[in-house]
Image 1 (cartoon, rainbow, N blue to C red):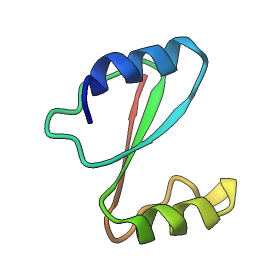
Image 2: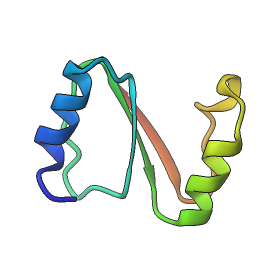
Image 3: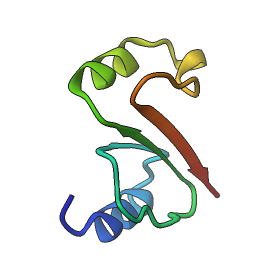
Image 4: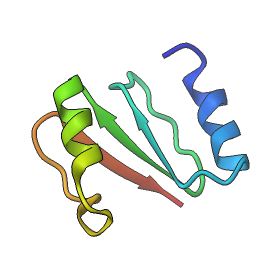
Length: 68
């Protein structure tokens, strides 16, 4: 993802708490933003179908990291 770091910082400034992104080579820490990496569209769809209480659970090609 081009300029991922600057885009994620801007998302955090705008008040977003979570970002769903493709696998990043060098995921930088963005204060207050939880990054969820998905490697397949099917993983993204499965993640979006989950209830909010289960959103932190991962599986398959999904990886969550919280930075605060």
